[in-house]
Image 1 (cartoon, helix red, strand yellow):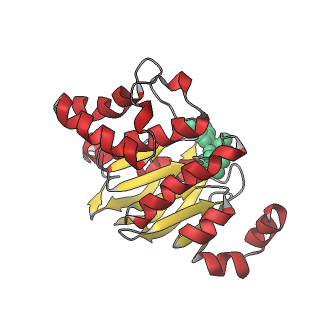
Image 2 (spheres, rainbow, N blue to C red; image 1 turned 90 degrees about the horizontal axis):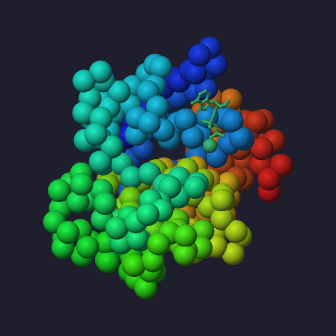
Length: 240
Ligand code: ADP
Ligand code: MG
């Protein structure tokens, strides 16, 4: 579904991603792991064109999204993104946060969008918070709303950039559980995370980035029990 070929990205003369080649199948759940500054966020951001790659090609469903004439907004509609810091609209209720893009971008009627939003709130366990404002929610609740908001656009792919890193420890599980459910429902997901338990249990594949290079691309069992590279071994020794 997603094909990445020789993807490179530089900021000035700082090469942040170097010749990344991999592909992700429909329904696959891929975790992206690596030290801080290794290019994980940049990699995700290239996939929905929040960053413009400096070289290489990304195709989604055979369409080259990195082509000069690619329909950027159409591509972004297919790809939901969840960030570390939620980015909810503070002046909108939970329900309005979720219905905003479907009504503005997809031109759904308020009724249609509300129905979808209520369904999604149920799915993330927040039916009782529809009329609350974000500042009344815990971090875990905010992140679950952010996931529901991304899902409201009916994306084909969901990207997560450290979705639990800003959360108090007791709220991590409620968010990971929602993501696990989504994975089980067959969503194609690419997840930057430091949650090694989740990576092991839920992902089909682990990508390990180091200094902008894709050093390992392996099933979790293989990655966690027998990493091939010294860099991955060192990284795992530090965190496990
Ligand atoms: P990670 O998510 O793995 O911590 P990032 O992708 O955020 O890594 O960053 C990789 C490198 O790219 C870092 O050295 C960072 O400083 C640099 N970088 C990221 N975004 C920008 C930007 N917009 N402008 C300049 N440098 C950037
Ligand atoms: Mg990052």
